[in-house]
Length: 251
Length: 159
Length: 107
Image: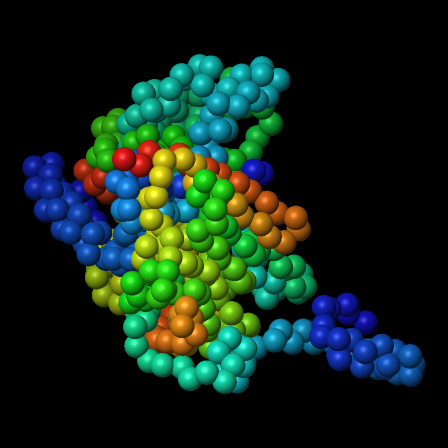
């Protein structure tokens, strides 16, 4: 896909976002939407509670809690998830929210690393991301991230795996159609980390991407791989303007 | 000899084979109990005994199609004044094709105000779910619903 | 990890009003029928009982089976009879037990 001239892309982007908002709402199964909307019935909120406890808990050799530096997450973390993945100077590349939290834990708290998809990392990420709920996704227009967004777009459009499918083949060209009885979504990561009924647990966007790649019969990238973060960045950029709904519930 | 958790009968058979000094390695297969329509009827009979099972008064709310059977929302409501004289004493929910037939038993009384419960259940396969309300006058009322369970389109590989 | 619990009980109600209570607790509800990666059955680990008491008197009880989904959600009704404490208790396999309470003001 060649880059459209800026003005046309913006208009197309607006139309797309409008369509996407409708599609996202319509694609939701009403009972699952109801589960998501009620904070006391949303299983993802149990993890957010865990995250809140972790936020306030002292950790690492520095014996510091997230709260000791960042104070009340409701204030300090508001809007953060809506702009991640973001460029990190020290790494010279974008990092996603899980990586950012890990870096903070390692550098500032001197705490041992948490595994990707560990309960604690998921809970912390969910708690932080929850503070952006209701806000529009807004990835900064950062010169430095452009080539990584392009890399992510390339992965999204590339045919791969045994079935020779690309993400775009389903999620751009065939969203709204059914695949094995389930509607194909546009694949906007508005609610991550989310509670997936199939997992019976909260899970990250990387987990979902890896699962999708397995489903496509392609070799999934390892957790934390640059490709996955580039893809996350591209997907968030593509979802710009849509509302963060963490923690979402999905089938 | 592979050690698998097995039913008592198979374990004894396996031990007997060992004791007999069989030369061939035998694998005791795991056979989880499967609920069958018979098991469902048996579970219902345990509750109602000889009493007749009447249709009506019970509304069982389940989506007719779910993508994933891991957390299917279920609501059971029973028409009843919920007074001291006339109320629902229990709501029993059963399934037809999970490994075992029970789902939930809720105990209610006049303090409930309304006979309505909601929860989320696991359904292993497309099947029928049955809800039975036991009334204070000893009568039993039931409703059933059929649910189709599809598997999510992208099958998750080993994490 | 301690079980996380979310309860939805109205803080205030009119005397005689029927209120809806929603409860959610974190628990894997391992059915005992799943097979793990090594081929062995994952042992059962479920919540088996949920009891709700209102100022000490039992108003609702549920017996749960392996067919209840993970992170059990249970919603039910009760009459707001008087101000006081509504208590919730869960118990299950492997000595599991958890409790929570909510206060209600009834006018």
